[in-house]
Length: 118
Length: 114
Image 1 (cartoon, rainbow over the protein chains, first blue to last red):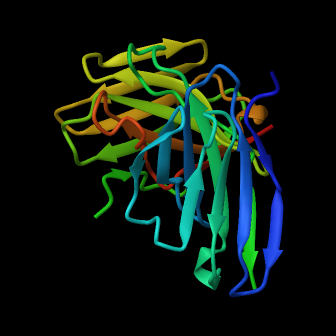
Image 2 (cartoon, rainbow over the protein chains, first blue to last red; image 1 turned 180 degrees about the vertical axis):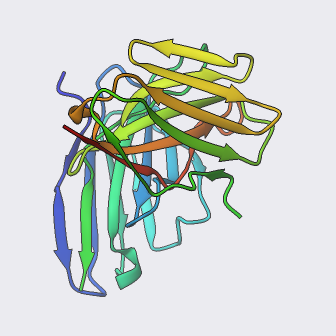
């Protein structure tokens, strides 16, 4: 297993266009997360899946954002009608319950997909 | 207001010396903290964790200390190596409930000079 894979690594788009990012988690992980990171900030939580069920969404996830994980494996994050404020690094992570400390949610992150909206 | 604060944006240390990275938090109801390290063009990678019921956790050159009365934790790296140069994030986590939501600080950029 090569870890969490994200595609594309960099996307440049014009304002108003739609973009889609794909994430392939570690195969045995049943939890998948999307975070967003802007310059000088830490990662900010967007949404979380357990298997195919989307269990939590941040208020940061506006109506223009939609995430899916149709078969409980890979996930897509779509941004419709992009705005310049959407420019950020979009990070995907996956995890499996357990670990140290017990029950801690240790996320394994991908390298991210950088979005630039012109 | 930020729930997890890393007040030092950057830190420069000489190789072989100790690096101390600090993190303050406001929510006493956390269950654990995680430290992540991030190199440019890579995603954050997990480094070390500490449970709320402990005050210290050690893993090789890395030790995390938790001071609950001060709502403060720190990561010590001894001895520091040039390969430790990266951005370090602390993140607060909770069991149950909001399991998806790790709350990250803004990060501290560590530079270890040879």
